[in-house]
Length: 361
Image (cartoon, rainbow, N blue to C red; front, side, top):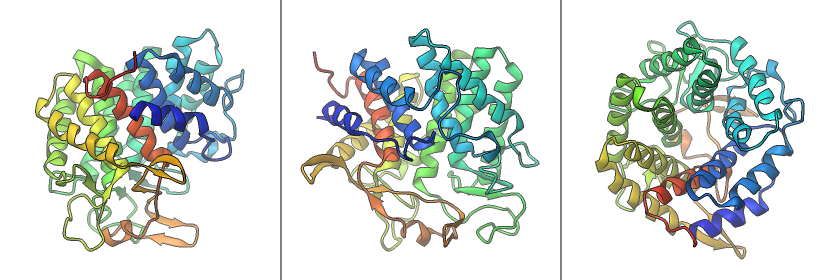
């Protein structure tokens, strides 16, 4: 059922923002890439090429993209460019990767070195952005033989962990070095709550950085990743999912959320496959069962429900997102959003490699 769902979803998928290069599409691209790697089935690469080629011109320019927006989210989709460069003879993919690397070379940073989340969110580092930028940066550095660029990616990760440390084994959503935002603590600059999907982005970033580094992975990175994932596993709910506000089970209205659960399942299975924290296989299996149970028909189409549509910090449209635990429960809950289905694809690919999901003969 899981692979059938992915295939049907990809067949009907429409670009998230009307075709403009964006991280939401990148979640699907990453999922399709990993499914192709895990199964070898041509359908996943065919879906990926159909979708990505429409956004990347022959000269490497990206549809609707502008460097000077300095939006760190725009880097995520670039991760698929390396894979497509390897699978085709088309130079457009690495030209596009070079374009995104040029953004990183001039992207504004906080004093401690981390990338601003966006130009419109100055002096702020969000956990989301660590997944958006750092694995791409690390892999690009490997491709170009730039050890300084690779080291910078890890330095940014460790700096962000320091600035978002919640003091309970988890990390808060964001940090504002200017303390200008109402959500930022006057003393620490930290936002107030631990949002599950922000931790999901972080967990996936850390797992992927270890995978990219291989046997030479930084020992501090490995230790911090195992510590975080074990802490997250401890917070798994009896139904196999994780709460939207992950560490507050008594918060009225709190609910088990699908996108974060998919991200944690992916990260757990990824590190287990790398030979780390083998006890995480059990929580990952329970999380996968939870997600498969959430695949239910809606309007005649099987969809993944229980996905937080979007959440952030600060001003957005006419709303100020104050980052309190209660705020995260006000955001709309949707089905089949790419931020949930994409990570489920990633988790599904790892599940295939872990012999938890069969592949059709």
